[in-house]
Every structure is written in structure tokens, then in C-alpha cells.
Length: 467
Image (cartoon, rainbow, N blue to C red; front, side, top):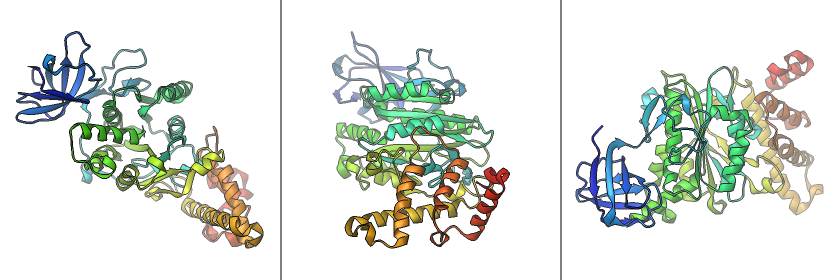
């Protein structure tokens, strides 16, 4: 590590950016201390190095920062954070400062915030699943260890509540060590309080690490919070051999902070005013998920984003969908009907679901079971639209059955309230719905699956294994 270098005076301040001259030897990503007489010390990070002018991103409010009085100390170390098992059960700010009244952690090691790219040749094929306790995800859009599966929410929809449920209820089957890391990005003070109180009352806090960037905190911290979470998660996953789930909420606030910084730097805007490099920037977050061939752990991501105006073609969900492996879409209609979680399974998708289900993981006919539920529910949704025009009396018998099935599916399978379901319980609920239909409607499930289900019902002691 280089010795600190001190520079006096700056050329200008623009928003969260400080423009400094004569910074020969500055490193990209280097930490900086910013001092002004009579004001608290501020932290910053070098985000651009030039021959004449370098740019420092200030991590606190810049109001009242006089450029001519700045004393800038370049510390000679890249942005990083302590990592290790010691962080489990702790709560930090979006900049890594403790919020739980305990001392700052020493950690087992110090790691750079931007991580190290995973060699594609070292990635292993993903297998096994993460049980979230939510049937609409576990049964219909299974989350696989090492996957990145975003949740597309909207303004007023319970995206943060869903994040809390996942943090509380997620687990992996078996004895593998498991941890959850949650990064709140730009959430309100009320949301912060409700989330922390809820988690503190559950046992999940002991295996969790929280990074909370509130709406009242500097916007620039929104860029740090997810990287702090992922850095902590990478160490636990790839060096401690744990299965780690990282939940990031809300990615939209992260992208808005990117746009704010780009505007301060007077960069040419792209779609909707967002910087043209937003795709590659988001990839630096999402591509940190995965699993290694020579390591037992895995890092799984659930980014949650609010679609502006419920527009799935907006640049944020659009680019996120390109990088990640599917999406869970929340429905405003289901939310108004009191369904929680309001997951719309029709546009939702887990592209590598097949890798995490099947014999030895859930049930060997899980895919056919899921396809059958999906097919009848889709037919019921179509029948609902038709019934609005011709009335239920104008529907065919099969369409009326599908219409009734769709209502039961939403209120008995998707809706859980505060109830957590294991994968066996999820499969059982789905079977009860399918068994309410005549055999002629079950065209996707197959005779083998129906036979195994019949045998399990006839032999109670085999029920759990067959489910």
C-alpha cells in the first residue's frame, strides 16, 4: 500500500463530484479523505484519473464544500471492506458503517468492492435449488443455487415485503451452511424501520447481514451498498464454502443514482436519460452470481426493481432481463385482490429451473406438474376475458372448469399471507387443485406421474416422499 498523498485545493464541485488538479499517481477506485476547516471529514473515491484533472466521487453531502479550502488525502488503497463470518447478524449503512451500536468489524480479510471476475472455465453447472417458502417461486419458477433471478415490481406493490419474506424464509435443503445478505437501496425511513424490526423478531437475523441505504442518505451510497453486499457474499460463498443468497432492493434507485452521476459529469445520455454504459454497469453486479467447480459454495441473487409506470420495456427491467436468467413479475390485479405474494406466474420465468428440480431434489415429475398447472391456469385466464364478453353461460364446460380453477389457483396456491410452505407442501397444494379436475383436462401431466400420485395416496407412509 502506498503512503497517503495530500493535495490542497480543488478546481470545482458539481453535485457529488469533486474535480481536482495535480493528482499525478492517483489510482482509479482509490479511497480519498476530504477535509474542509470547520466541517466533518468526508470520504470519497477516485472515479476518473486524468493528466490535468481527476474526478473524486464524494460519499457524503457536498453542500457547503468550498473547493479552494479542500484538503484531499489520497490513501493509496482501493475501495474495499472487511469480510468474514463475523459480519453475520450485523447491520450496516450503505457505506459500511455499523448501525447496530457495535464496533466496526475487523473481519477475516479485506476485499475490494469490485470483486474479481469469475473465470468462465471455472464455473460449474448449476444444480439444486433455494427454497424460498413461496409456492409461486418454488413450485412454478424454481430458484437455483448460483442463479440470478430478478423480481419485477412496481410503485405501490409489495416488493420490499416480498424481499423480507425471502430473507426470513429462504433456506437450502440438507446440511449445507446458508446465509442471506440484504442490501436496501434508497428505501424510506419507515420501510427501514419496519424491515429491521420484522427481521429482528425472527431467527433469520442470526444468518443474515444487512446493508441499509435510506432515501435520506447520500444518493452516491446507492452505488456502494450492493457492492458491499456482494463482496461480503463472495467471501462467504467462495472462500468459506457457504450457500449465500443476496437480495438487492431496489435496483431502480441504483440506476437513478447512476443517471445522477452521469448528469453531473455532463455525459451524453442514452435511453430515458440513463447512461449508455448502464448495461455493463448492471452486469458488474449481476454476473457476480454463480458457483465454482472447485468450491462447495454458491452465490445466488434476487435483485428487486420497481418498473417505472409498470413498463416492462423501460431500460431498467429491459436490460436486467437481458443479463439475468428469468424474472418474477408482480401483478397489480392480484395485489388489489388481496393475494400475497401477488406473483403473476404467466409472464414469470426461471430459465434454468430444470437444473434445480427433479429426482433427488424435489420430485422427478415436478416439471410436468408445473406445466399442467400453468396450462390450466392460462386457459382459465383466457376464459375470464371471454366470460367478460359472453358471460359464463356462453363458455364450454372445459373453459368453465378452467375459470373456476384459475380463481382457486390464485387464492389457494399463489396466496400464502404469512404462511411459509416447504416444497413438499407446495406440491401437495398443487396436487389438490389438479385432482379437482377430470382426467380429460390433465393432458400435460402424464400417466407415470398420475400413477405415482395414486400410489402415494393409497399408502400414507409414502405420501411425503411421493409429494
